[in-house]
Image 1: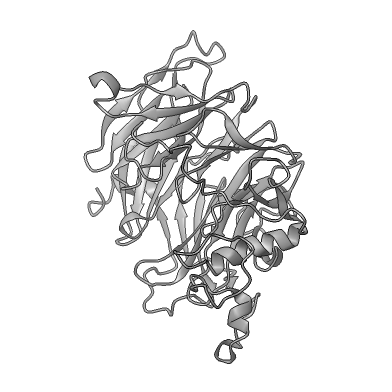
Image 2: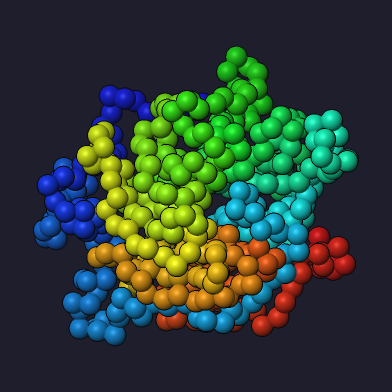
Length: 451
């Protein structure tokens, strides 16, 4: 590793007054990020005065107080009921314990998805689809006595910060890295069926050669793929402490936007926060969910806040503070009950007068897509039911690079990717990129315009 945090330096965690109620704690932590202190002043999470602060993101309450924004309200930002674009994704698995979709903001936005053993990429700027990688290993018959010869398949993936590489985890436990441009494999662990299916992956936010993997045995590994590591040789992966970590399948991994902390959710109902560059043990542990934890989203403007969603037995969305070194300050500060298994979360940052929101996608009966306002507290705004015929496992918000409109993307077990606009958009619509039609990833083999 080339990045270490000096333990003598002040931590980026900030402490909130435990005498305040959870709602007050949450509001004040958010307010501190919405109205940060001047760089030369001491950081104070309970700052109420705006006279010495610079406005970074306007809060909804502040917007509403201005006469020129009287039309803006907590519920004005909503999802359109009908999607404007549907994309066929034949071969996408309806599996809660895989993570076969990745979104990268580079180059206008790049969607990467695994369909069976092949990984495809789609650039939102030009709408072109291309093949990135194909897993062609054969699983040994002796290792899988219930099967005959079986091809390995992708069970998780993640892209590097610059979008030049894709890391792939497979059913057989293999970890591979592919160069996106040349479509060649540049790294492989070559572990086939050691009973460690790779279920989740997360590439470090600020390094092009370090990523994390989570397996079905609860283990979490840090991989360094540099050609010349310590001592002039490749630095192999090392494991986080499994005794203090998860005891069952890793359902998901998420880096905070500042690259300081990694959240892991497990089938053991645990939500853990790690600081991999400082310790191989979790720094924060939450055991309050009564179902598996797959859905996670870090607050994009306060890196001490983490949202999580519980599985079928839980159905809650919780927002937590991870500040402080004691459990008194590591708590749920907001929570709300939902209609079903929470499969995915995305936290939308406030921009252009739009308040901050969380989007959730759900399983169970209605396969719903829900929108929640988060400031000054967590409130339900909208739910779209039965948008997919099966549960949506991935949800993403982005500003489309061509139309400049807010887009909500969902990927479902029904093998359909839906794109829908929000209304009103945070940025005025200029053009429409897509017509309402369907496109099929499989057509790349028959379309000369898509390599």
